[in-house]
Length: 165
Ligand SMILES: [Cu+2]
Image (cartoon, rainbow, N blue to C red; front, side):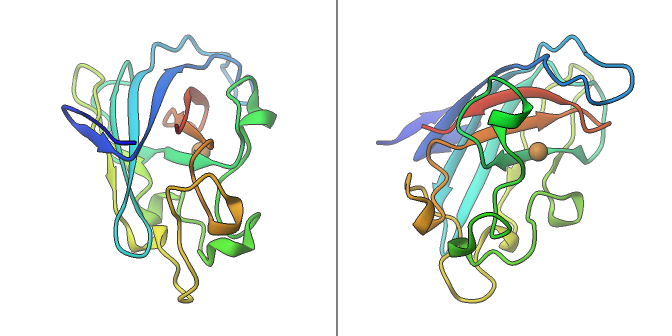
């Protein structure tokens, strides 16, 4: 295992592709040209989550979001799942949803619509001393391999998806 490219180095990588199936928000469905990569590496008791993205809304500051979700397929909103943490997987021991703006699960874009988010927030580790996220494919270890990575527009619409492998 192992992967590296400029701006995105990790034990797991998800190739992000446009997702246009989210009609949940007013004004949708949106045209999406979101592409790029998301990478995960082990860091202490938890993970570091890094992206290298393009095709986003230009010139945005700290919008949400850049998340790992609980599903294993990009087909539709249901199979993509919701935020992945102890809410669904008690083994994580991650007791606060880390995929929120206050927890740093946001990104900022250049005037060209590029972004390079880095999330190494302590919220990606266990706060109760259990395990925190790991790079395994085993949910009993709170593993993120095989899980979806979702890119949201500023209004929350899902516009990019990939699977960590
Ligand atoms: Cu999300």
